[in-house]
Amino acid sequence: MSKFTDFNFNGHKALIRVDFNVPLDKQTFAITDDTRMTATIPTIKKILGDGGSVILMSHLGRPKDGPEDKYSLKHVVAHLSELLGGVTVKFADDCIGASAVELSASLKAGEVLLLENLRFYKEEEKGDEAFAEKLSKLGDVWVNDAFGTAHRAHASTAVIAKFYPVEKRFFGFVMEGEVVAAEKVLHKAEKPFCAIIGGAKVSDKILIIENLLERATDIIIGGGMAYTFMKAMGGKIGNSLCEEDRIQTAIDLLKKAEAKGVNIHLPSDSIIADKFAADANTSTAPSNNIPDGWMGLDIAADACNQFTNVIENSRTILWNGPMGVFEMEKFQHGTKTVAIAVANATAKGAFSLVGGGDSVAAVNQFGFADKVSYVSTGGGAMLEYFEGKVLPGIAAVQS
Ligand code: AMP
Image (cartoon, rainbow, N blue to C red; front, side, top):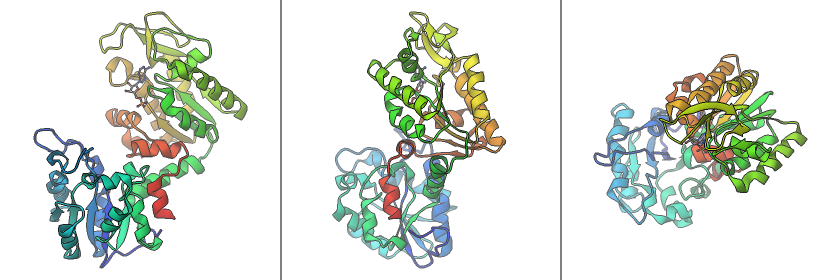
């Protein structure tokens, strides 16, 4: 691969895989969150600024069987033009075929063409080679800037690579930022390295914890998943979330951690509730002694201090998953406290990465996104990266 920043795109037609899978209002089709679009604007601008032209391809939603108006990328054209400062965005109503070929062939320097939803063709998700080859004819260089789909070996995200020599494959700025941040945590972490893992289920996080046991000095386990660990250690957890079939897994993970000298931190106490509801009655209890009829929905004061202490003494921090049911005000204090601790550690020079799903929503909701080193945009992709998997969308550009 060549380095995106160093390459001069003057005279080139760059085919860029972007992630414009943005949420749309069901009635008006207005974009309700344009984060994924704004993220990739610098990549597009760099190419246009060099004197190149840009052909954008993306998926949108999950169309079942061919074209569907509600999943058409035509709904994002006007906003894209606005984000690019008024540059006209042409639209090909089919991502392959005569119109796409003609429009891309006649594209001049500084011009932008957006292709219709790739997933209107089943071939995209199947990673069909012939389909990928057709797409590759539209641009002479390929830029992958869609980190959100980097864990999929689809036609436009990975298979297409074989139709470009390695020096004509690039990561855009979004992809590069994500890869650099993840590599820093996974392979160049300064110690102490603390991983904060929360969220609902142990089953979703087993692989990530196993991989982190090889790398982290401390692993904080919070959220609903902590109670399966509590039960595994002989605790009484009332009605708290528990995956009975993962109790043995929890025991094995605890044993492995001990053997490797990794400190596992479980919440000493919990905010408990008499029902899973915003208006539940609440109290506090040791996390391993929750009364019958009650459930742990957040970490409590001692656990907050315990976790803050570990986090603020770390040099590298990875955070995936909330400490409690942060969507309800009564149970968001623990997640907020962890966000503050991560921000404080970052201010003291630690490198902090928040990645994967709800912890990203939490730092955004609490206004901490600019107080951590990096917030990942790729939920599932970042999770798989932390699990130690090779992501096809990354490997395709690099090799
Ligand atoms: P995940 O997608 O696995 O990161 O899980 C996030 C979800 O876990 C959020 O919707 C939280 O409300 C939920 N969650 C966090 N802590 C708890 C808890 N103690 N009990 C039940 N659900 C929880």
